[in-house]
Image (cartoon, rainbow, N blue to C red; front, side):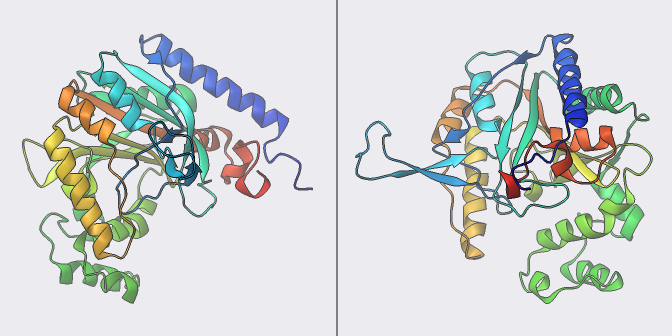
Length: 325
């Protein structure tokens, strides 16, 4: 019966009410809803993120006999920042995003993303606003905040900003997580991300949402480096009931620094035998023109609805999963 939806009519009505709540939340704060393209000529360079591609034969200035690659957006971020650079005020988007990743309980390659940008906000201002939205939709307890450095020290007993490669491997071994394929990459940042995902994440956000902030610079290519500690950037994430729900930044506005980070991403892709990704020249041009100081955040709407409805599989809050699309 694969023609039938995975979202029941009862849950569809509940989902619709949550979307209404979200729009009302931003209407009360004078944050304007915008739409951005789902297709782009450029895409993200992130080593751990891949876009879905399609072919197009009718791009202006190209031959109709020769197709070009277009990329489905992994996030509306670049387009939204171009709007901000052109003079828009505070904005949000409720739109489909696409990622070339395996489907699972918490992920479908096509999903709904809420993303918003607040001019003049720092990461703590935005975490406070995210907290208000979560309490509005979920009725949850007041979220707690802790730094990336502190949660590592508390949970696994090492400082992630000073730990050696050998110390990171030792943590993996203590928790029976030392895989040859991971260690052979010889990449401390990959070990940090694995430790965080496999060992730390399951321990946080149990009774209330938990914000982790000030990630290592290598894990925050679109965020501003902290003035207090140049080893970390002003990026935050939020976890609740085992789900990664939110990813936010005090946004990087320097075009040269952003270009250098994109180039570093592509160099890392090359070293790992991955295909390099085309840099979004329009986004860089917008940064050169001038992006106002702002903070932005992306929130997985389907995951938010899962938490609100108390269901365990993302297919239960989407009309059709990828297997039935």
